[in-house]
Image 1: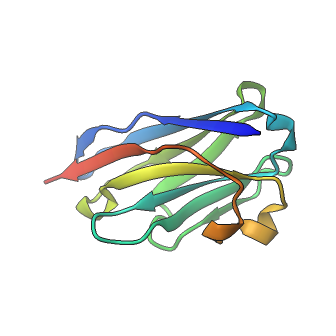
Image 2: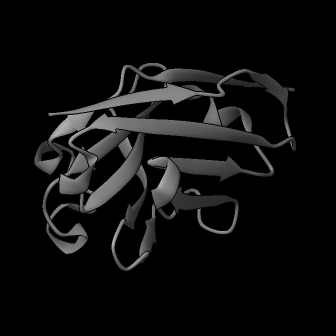
Image 3: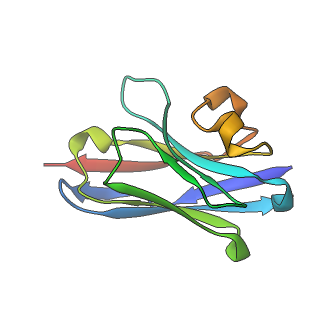
Length: 126
């Protein structure tokens, strides 16, 4: 089993930046892919970004390309989501996820991820 814990969510102004963290524990050696999803008010949970823990390949939703960066620190069993030029539309509960399968098999497919964190809230105001 793998446990995931997000942190770093807070309220920021539009145009500002925020970095979220996701710490993994348990059987972390089984993780091949980690990702961030978010759920905006009144909408379904959506894919944000993913990264391979072996090769480091990254994937992004079109809505965040050029603004968000996903990174990992294998030694710390932690991944991050650095968010820049934040907009009101980025307000959401952000969840981290992990899968025991290759990134190409799961990337943006919510149903393919094996483990989920409880989420951390980020609010962006004008």
